[in-house]
Length: 330
Image: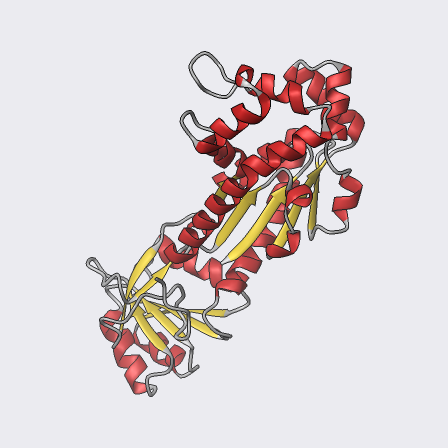
């Protein structure tokens, strides 16, 4: 699993990029959502906030009055630090739980949306850091126009965060958001494709060179085969498509590390595999797959997680990848 941190100063456009990544298939862990969950009515965190900042930060229904709280911490560094101390440990624990659950599910690409990544965490804890940035004057304009803030309040909100210039050198990718929405989407898509490639490589169970995708004939194809081909091609694996007995026999002689066959191609693929000395793992799609044989997450590529039957692996614990030395999933 590739564990990515996505960050950006206020009004830089980070939330828009998160929306793109979510739509394109990444698993998203949203720090703002986790904070709202931690500060829910009846929570220990909300009670601690009320003790520290006063009961007037609570709305009539017992929920957090975020505007009232913001007015108390916006110009007070010590108060803001106290608020972070109250909220962030709970958020971090919950994030760690969600990332662990994603890894156990076999998710391939997890993007953590963390506005204050550099201010409150160590970016080195993540495999990749993506920064969304925009010029400060443009961010000021957005704050005033979109949130109705005064110049003074907008200036204070921007000043409360670490300058983006200090974050850029510590980020592997920077998405510039100084133009139109289509321009932002194009940049985000370029970065997402690279993250997808890195995730595919990162998720490989072992160094692998050849994957054979086996079909019974030219009409025996499926979206899952296409998605699988895309994933492993991006990971640098040579993907060989083979349809029919002769093509399957020739492909098996390449000694692939794994062969994945459609249900219709299961018998000829097994015959070719055995004839070539059983090279690598042999797996099949099935109408009733054994879910403990292998699981493969293709969602970042636009598909669903696949459960596959592996020849000779009935009863083995599940693993995340097609290739034999992939780590078992809990």
